[in-house]
Image 1 (cartoon, one colour):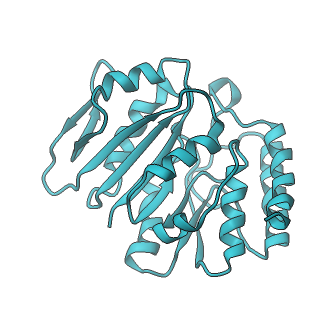
Image 2 (tube, rainbow, N blue to C red):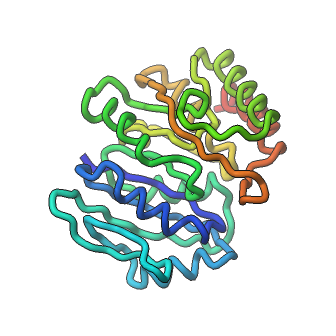
Length: 257
């Protein structure tokens, strides 16, 4: 089975190279398709991508970062190939827009969304993948930052907002998920093909969860994942406005067509 990894990117020049090397090295026995969607970055991310992917997609079984901060593709015996492909938005469309473009481009059997900011550890993808592809007990697997180790202690109001959002979601959609705002959502191609997404902002997290829950046919699991959260000075982008919108989206996506 091919694992497709969608990476929405906006102004992550400092972390992207290392993130791609780590993601490519995760699950070394699994063929991977990594789709990087640059959402019109203005910090040099786009220029770096075009320099490292001058002819589009690149492939290799080994990926590292050289002393100049560029990607070095190589060959490692016994390791499955990873294919990395960039997509460039001509204008900023928000995280939801980047996820849209990535999901439309993937061809794999299983797909997961991966942020480009090193807040999540790709080694956690293994247990998620195993539940779907090896044990075959799940169609959808959520990560949960509340049950993973380590978990960076940051803002209490973020913790409270995430708990409130997940609680309200569970009440309205009859679920028991602890962290619907988590980036790590892995699902089968069948689940991906069933989604009809419209959100262009961070509401994409709620919309994906709403459509999965309302389908009433997917087997949903949750596992703890590590979380190396960032402060705003370190580049964190989500704000309190996104939290308020998430509460609205929970109600909107439950009762809209």
